[in-house]
Length: 92
Image 1 (spheres, helix red, strand yellow):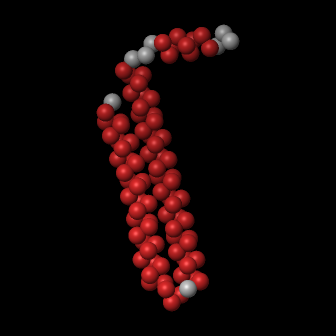
Image 2: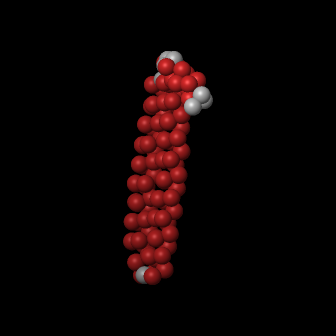
Image 3: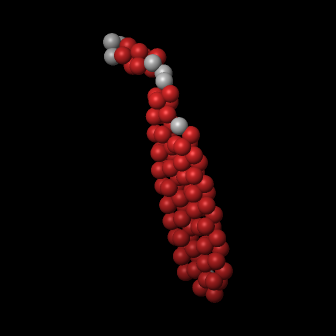
């Protein structure tokens, strides 16, 4: 219990620097999660495209085109999240 008191005292000294530090940490975590999510999404799209082309080789062109479009949509969402993270950092 005696260890909580210094934490509460530090939390009471709320300043602009304190809030900007939390915002920057949140923006960094958000950008990292966006990149990890995009990597997982593009990996799944690529795996499913390869599986689909292996199962139906006569439709390989259509499957590949659809896979590229889906990968571009996933990447666009990730870039949007990273831009939002950078805007949060630049606000503080």
